Amino acid sequence: MASTTREQATNLPTAISDGAHPAKSVLKEAVDAVLNSFAKHTHGYGRVDVIEALQEFWQMKESRGTPMKGGSDVLYEPEASEKPPYVCFVSLPGGSCFGSFQPCPTKAEAKRSAAKIALMNSVFNEHPSRKITDEFVESAVKEAESTEAQVALKRRTLNLLTDSSKDPSTGIGAFRFMLESNKGKSMLEFQDLMTIFQLLHWNGSLKAMRDRNCSRQEVLEHYSDRTIDDEMRSQMALDWISREQEQQGLIKRELDKASKELEQCRLSGRELRFPKEKRDILMLAWSQIGKV
Image (cartoon, rainbow, N blue to C red; front, side):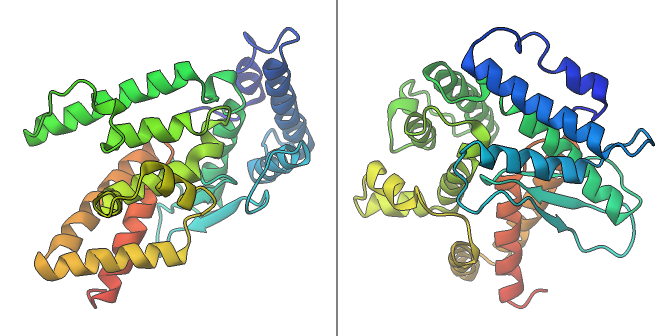
């Protein structure tokens, strides 16, 4: 989690911004744009208007030709609360979501806190290491396998098959397939599609489509141009309502679990799109069965 001081922001690209490599040049331009925005919005009080700086950063990327389905607008979503600490989420073009990671005494401070972590992640996203390459795929899949093994061990459902990451019918296999289908993109650019497939896996929809003999390629093509919208959330909420009829109390248990996960991720400054969408879908289902 990075501070927005000029000194720390300058230190970010020091070891990689020199030379004529195109990726390094893009990174340097991105960091320079942020630093120029810092200077522009530091009105003599030593404070940076990170909200304006973040918006200018994404407008700069759009002007460079980066494709953005919904435009370059940065969207803020404050949590409803009558007293501090206040919480605010910010969604970036491409689908990534971050949240205020500090105890915030005012709603304005919560918004600035969310913008701060989003700005630093936006700059870091320009680093060549954030591009999806063959090496990145192998590293990401290995990390995902390790995480799934830990979860499976706790649940005592550990599967000792070593090639599950190459089987497209498994969750890890689907993750590998998506990464390999999006080589060349950055992780923030890939976030929306990745979250869609995470939700489909979490919701049981991938299994249902597989049972209907839909190939992984067909599913990917169907969802590649989609974004997570109210229609998708509503459909998934209906799925959970159907499960609630078979298992009373299921939605409440899952909602409590998702809310706790979101809170932990937010306070640690992590990317939040998947846990936030899970919570929002479950809250929608919970409200529709008349519990709220």
